[in-house]
Image (tube, rainbow, N blue to C red; front, side, top):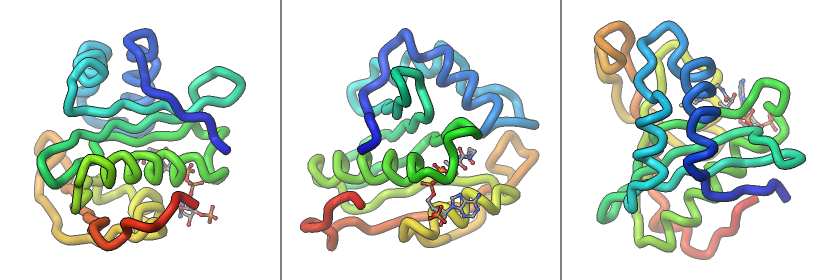
Length: 157
Ligand SMILES: CC(C)(COP(=O)(O)OP(=O)(O)OC[C@H]1O[C@@H](n2cnc3c(N)ncnc32)[C@H](O)[C@@H]1OP(=O)(O)O)[C@@H](O)C(=O)NCCC(=O)NCCS
Protein backbone atom coordinates (compact mmCIF):
# COMPACT_ATOMS: atom_id res chain seq x y z
CA UNK A 1 0.00 0.00 0.00
CA UNK A 2 1.19 3.50 -0.83
CA UNK A 3 0.88 5.91 2.12
CA UNK A 4 -1.35 8.87 1.26
CA UNK A 5 -2.33 11.72 3.56
CA UNK A 6 -3.91 15.14 3.30
CA UNK A 7 -1.39 17.91 2.74
CA UNK A 8 -0.76 20.61 5.33
CA UNK A 9 0.46 24.15 4.88
CA UNK A 10 3.99 22.87 5.65
CA UNK A 11 3.87 20.84 2.41
CA UNK A 12 2.76 23.78 0.27
CA UNK A 13 6.21 25.04 -0.81
CA UNK A 14 7.31 21.57 -1.94
CA UNK A 15 4.04 20.96 -3.80
CA UNK A 16 4.32 24.34 -5.51
CA UNK A 17 7.91 23.59 -6.55
CA UNK A 18 6.84 20.24 -8.00
CA UNK A 19 4.08 21.98 -9.94
CA UNK A 20 6.54 24.53 -11.33
CA UNK A 21 9.13 21.92 -12.31
CA UNK A 22 7.04 18.94 -13.43
CA UNK A 23 3.72 20.42 -14.65
CA UNK A 24 4.11 24.10 -15.51
CA UNK A 25 7.59 24.01 -17.03
CA UNK A 26 7.83 26.50 -19.89
CA UNK A 27 4.75 28.35 -18.65
CA UNK A 28 4.44 31.03 -16.00
CA UNK A 29 4.36 29.61 -12.44
CA UNK A 30 0.69 29.90 -11.48
CA UNK A 31 0.52 27.31 -8.67
CA UNK A 32 2.84 29.15 -6.31
CA UNK A 33 3.06 28.44 -2.57
CA UNK A 34 0.28 30.88 -1.65
CA UNK A 35 -2.13 29.30 -4.13
CA UNK A 36 -1.36 25.83 -2.79
CA UNK A 37 -1.90 27.05 0.79
CA UNK A 38 -5.31 28.39 -0.28
CA UNK A 39 -6.14 25.00 -1.82
CA UNK A 40 -5.12 23.23 1.40
CA UNK A 41 -7.53 25.42 3.36
CA UNK A 42 -10.35 25.41 0.78
CA UNK A 43 -13.16 23.15 2.08
CA UNK A 44 -14.09 22.16 -1.49
CA UNK A 45 -10.56 21.12 -2.43
CA UNK A 46 -8.56 18.05 -1.49
CA UNK A 47 -4.77 18.26 -1.59
CA UNK A 48 -3.30 14.78 -1.15
CA UNK A 49 0.33 13.70 -0.93
CA UNK A 50 1.86 10.27 -1.30
CA UNK A 51 4.89 9.58 0.84
CA UNK A 52 7.93 7.34 0.79
CA UNK A 53 9.94 7.09 4.00
CA UNK A 54 8.06 10.18 5.23
CA UNK A 55 9.12 12.34 2.28
CA UNK A 56 6.71 13.45 -0.43
CA UNK A 57 6.82 11.28 -3.56
CA UNK A 58 3.80 12.77 -5.32
CA UNK A 59 0.74 14.94 -4.89
CA UNK A 60 -2.67 15.62 -6.39
CA UNK A 61 -5.16 18.48 -6.07
CA UNK A 62 -8.84 17.93 -6.77
CA UNK A 63 -11.70 20.43 -6.46
CA UNK A 64 -15.19 19.13 -5.72
CA UNK A 65 -18.41 20.66 -7.03
CA UNK A 66 -21.99 19.41 -6.64
CA UNK A 67 -21.84 16.34 -8.89
CA UNK A 68 -18.50 16.77 -10.57
CA UNK A 69 -14.88 16.95 -9.51
CA UNK A 70 -11.90 18.40 -11.32
CA UNK A 71 -8.34 17.19 -11.02
CA UNK A 72 -6.30 20.38 -11.05
CA UNK A 73 -2.79 18.99 -10.60
CA UNK A 74 -1.00 15.68 -10.29
CA UNK A 75 2.70 14.92 -10.24
CA UNK A 76 5.05 12.20 -9.07
CA UNK A 77 8.77 12.86 -8.54
CA UNK A 78 10.83 11.36 -11.39
CA UNK A 79 12.61 8.73 -9.28
CA UNK A 80 9.26 7.39 -8.04
CA UNK A 81 7.51 7.15 -11.41
CA UNK A 82 6.17 3.93 -12.96
CA UNK A 83 5.64 2.39 -9.53
CA UNK A 84 1.88 2.89 -9.46
CA UNK A 85 1.91 6.03 -7.30
CA UNK A 86 0.11 8.29 -9.79
CA UNK A 87 -2.54 5.64 -10.33
CA UNK A 88 -2.98 5.17 -6.58
CA UNK A 89 -3.36 8.92 -5.98
CA UNK A 90 -6.04 9.17 -8.68
CA UNK A 91 -7.89 6.09 -7.38
CA UNK A 92 -7.73 7.48 -3.83
CA UNK A 93 -9.31 10.74 -5.02
CA UNK A 94 -11.88 8.85 -7.09
CA UNK A 95 -12.97 7.02 -3.94
CA UNK A 96 -13.33 10.36 -2.13
CA UNK A 97 -15.32 11.69 -5.07
CA UNK A 98 -17.67 8.70 -5.06
CA UNK A 99 -18.24 9.17 -1.34
CA UNK A 100 -19.06 12.83 -2.02
CA UNK A 101 -21.68 11.81 -4.62
CA UNK A 102 -19.65 12.87 -7.61
CA UNK A 103 -20.62 11.44 -11.01
CA UNK A 104 -18.06 12.83 -13.36
CA UNK A 105 -14.36 13.60 -13.10
CA UNK A 106 -12.56 15.93 -15.45
CA UNK A 107 -9.10 17.32 -15.99
CA UNK A 108 -7.04 19.23 -18.53
CA UNK A 109 -3.63 18.14 -19.69
CA UNK A 110 -1.16 19.94 -21.92
CA UNK A 111 -1.51 18.93 -25.55
CA UNK A 112 2.23 18.19 -25.67
CA UNK A 113 2.08 15.94 -22.60
CA UNK A 114 1.53 12.66 -24.41
CA UNK A 115 2.83 10.62 -21.44
CA UNK A 116 0.20 12.06 -19.09
CA UNK A 117 -2.53 11.52 -21.70
CA UNK A 118 -1.46 7.86 -21.93
CA UNK A 119 -1.44 7.65 -18.13
CA UNK A 120 -5.00 8.99 -17.82
CA UNK A 121 -6.22 6.80 -20.69
CA UNK A 122 -4.82 3.78 -18.83
CA UNK A 123 -7.08 4.79 -15.94
CA UNK A 124 -10.20 4.98 -18.12
CA UNK A 125 -10.26 8.71 -18.92
CA UNK A 126 -11.39 9.70 -22.42
CA UNK A 127 -10.36 12.73 -24.42
CA UNK A 128 -13.45 14.88 -24.92
CA UNK A 129 -12.20 18.12 -26.46
CA UNK A 130 -9.26 20.33 -27.23
CA UNK A 131 -9.18 23.84 -25.73
CA UNK A 132 -6.99 26.22 -27.74
CA UNK A 133 -4.70 28.55 -25.81
CA UNK A 134 -5.84 27.17 -22.45
CA UNK A 135 -2.39 27.50 -20.90
CA UNK A 136 -1.61 31.21 -20.82
CA UNK A 137 -2.45 31.46 -24.53
CA UNK A 138 0.72 29.52 -25.34
CA UNK A 139 -0.45 25.91 -25.39
CA UNK A 140 -3.69 24.05 -25.95
CA UNK A 141 -5.23 21.67 -23.45
CA UNK A 142 -6.84 18.32 -23.94
CA UNK A 143 -9.86 17.85 -21.68
CA UNK A 144 -10.34 14.33 -20.37
CA UNK A 145 -13.29 12.96 -18.43
CA UNK A 146 -14.39 9.82 -16.68
CA UNK A 147 -17.86 8.90 -15.52
CA UNK A 148 -17.66 7.17 -12.14
CA UNK A 149 -21.39 6.84 -11.42
CA UNK A 150 -21.38 3.22 -12.61
CA UNK A 151 -18.40 2.25 -10.49
CA UNK A 152 -20.03 2.22 -7.06
CA UNK A 153 -18.80 -1.26 -6.14
CA UNK A 154 -15.27 -0.99 -7.49
CA UNK A 155 -12.21 -0.75 -5.27
CA UNK A 156 -8.87 0.90 -5.99
CA UNK A 157 -6.45 -1.49 -7.62
C1 LIG B 1 1.83 11.39 -15.27
C2 LIG B 1 2.42 10.91 -13.94
C3 LIG B 1 1.66 11.58 -12.79
C4 LIG B 1 2.24 9.38 -13.84
O1 LIG B 1 2.65 8.97 -12.54
P1 LIG B 1 3.27 7.51 -12.27
O2 LIG B 1 3.29 7.28 -10.82
O3 LIG B 1 4.57 7.38 -12.98
O4 LIG B 1 2.21 6.57 -13.00
P2 LIG B 1 1.87 5.04 -12.66
O5 LIG B 1 3.12 4.32 -12.28
O6 LIG B 1 0.76 5.00 -11.69
O7 LIG B 1 1.38 4.53 -14.09
C5 LIG B 1 0.15 3.84 -14.30
C6 LIG B 1 0.03 3.52 -15.76
O8 LIG B 1 -0.08 4.74 -16.53
C7 LIG B 1 0.60 4.59 -17.78
N1 LIG B 1 1.77 5.47 -17.82
C8 LIG B 1 2.38 6.08 -16.79
N2 LIG B 1 3.41 6.84 -17.22
C9 LIG B 1 3.44 6.70 -18.56
C10 LIG B 1 4.28 7.23 -19.57
N3 LIG B 1 5.32 8.06 -19.28
N4 LIG B 1 4.04 6.87 -20.85
C11 LIG B 1 3.03 6.05 -21.16
N5 LIG B 1 2.17 5.51 -20.23
C12 LIG B 1 2.40 5.83 -18.95
C13 LIG B 1 1.07 3.11 -17.83
O9 LIG B 1 0.01 2.35 -18.39
C14 LIG B 1 1.23 2.81 -16.35
O10 LIG B 1 1.15 1.43 -16.06
P3 LIG B 1 2.51 0.53 -16.21
O11 LIG B 1 3.61 1.25 -15.49
O12 LIG B 1 2.11 -0.75 -15.53
O13 LIG B 1 2.77 0.40 -17.67
C15 LIG B 1 3.95 11.21 -13.85
O14 LIG B 1 4.57 10.75 -15.02
C16 LIG B 1 4.26 12.69 -13.68
O15 LIG B 1 4.32 13.21 -12.57
N6 LIG B 1 4.49 13.41 -14.80
C17 LIG B 1 4.82 14.84 -14.75
C18 LIG B 1 3.63 15.68 -14.29
C19 LIG B 1 2.42 15.47 -15.18
O16 LIG B 1 2.52 15.30 -16.40
N7 LIG B 1 1.24 15.47 -14.54
C20 LIG B 1 -0.02 15.22 -15.22
C21 LIG B 1 -0.63 16.46 -15.78
S1 LIG B 1 -1.25 17.52 -14.48
